[in-house]
Image 1 (tube, rainbow, N blue to C red):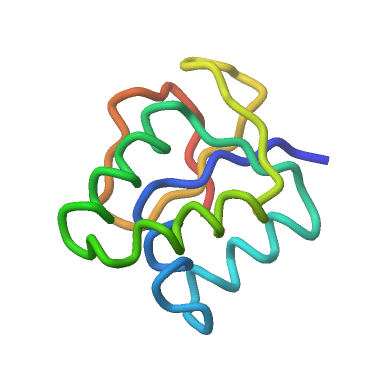
Image 2: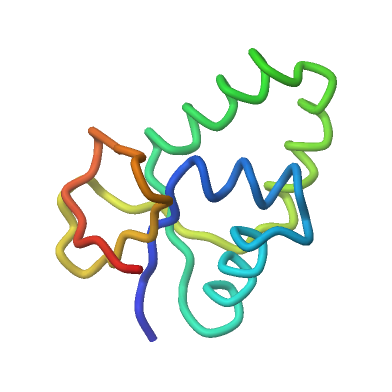
Length: 98
């Protein structure tokens, strides 16, 4: 079972659009792998939602409560990084996966 770090853009899209491709990708990770998030991704996710959709903050907390994930340390070589095209996570040193 791979440990997969999911980019902020994937999480935002999955949260806002439950029937989207990113939501299906996240569901696949949750079903077949171990989801890990970096502190940087979690912080950025809260900042983006608060800035763009402040009314969705409470729903985001519920989303996180139901999400089964672990925390990844920056540069952890055992983590596969799943991100959307064109995004960058400066806090990670993970391999990219598509």
